[in-house]
Length: 444
Image (cartoon, rainbow, N blue to C red; front, side, top):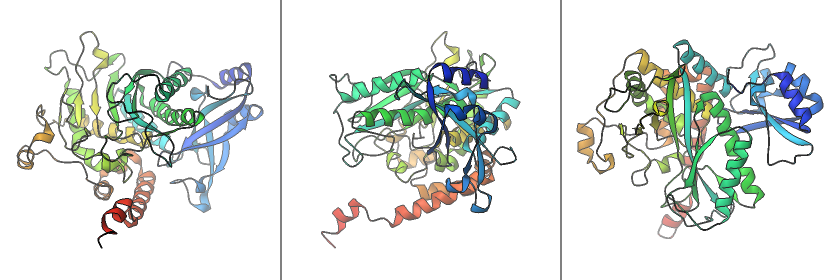
């Protein structure tokens, strides 16, 4: 249990002491969209004991109409005040675990999917830690996607709305107990990055769901729009979510080995091998939208090819440089996911892939220190460097045959998720785009 664990009595007392009037109970559907039901302080004690009933058939990927009754059971560990709401008669939130009417965990709950994988990790003696780097854009509005600035990577732009938005968002996150390590302007105009302080995977998944809402709420408060769309601008870099991962055994980082030239242990190498072996079939989860694949193209810094190395930013998997005295920061960075994903499912499949690498003692290929993008197709073929799926259709086809994805997600989520993605792809494939109209209408 996390060190910040809270019990029901603590939540009741704090809510009353801080004049909380409303509590939002949050959970996600299989696509990672946040769902919420609000209760008043008068209903809080009963909700903590018995949960809140709702119609599961109305939630994407949950249940059929004839088995629709579900229970949202609040997790007291996730109680936090929403700092952008008024202090008087304030608002708090708690994430919920979804239960069947009999009280059993619901297999279609993404939070439960991650909990199952974390239990499997714990049975092997490991705690799974995550530290994501999240990129996103600020625009004038969703209807008018014009940048708020023209800055570039690490630029210190004059004081403007975007700088204030990022600052206010970080302060709000920290007030809610979500640690932020760094923030900076990214490569594209009006693109920003916030890097989170690593913590256990469940807490981080909750934190990412919170962050996406906080960023949008604060932007809306200032009359602008925050988006985690992977590729909102033609000709500019897209937005990714680099996922930094590590396994700990107690206080010891299981990925660190002082004697290895990369300071990466055998455990770490097996984990890398598991990721590289399965990442293609998991890409429908890590990059779940048709737009995700407009980011995963050569020329815009996003990874495309399956390679790994230390420091090299053209590789899919990167081993960040080790700093003496900071063994705890040793980690593996996967650079393909984007923040428009469902983090509970993404962390689940990545952990499952890494753990399979450990169980089977898989070995990764030799690290690739050269620029993979600069290689010819023949050279990549000779070195057996494969490529990520080029579109969602290919990603779905790869996922359909993945035993690991089915085991990691559970049959309910696996089938529901892929059914939704197939429908998404068919709608996308049939849509007439601006490109079609501008390119072909004048000449055909």
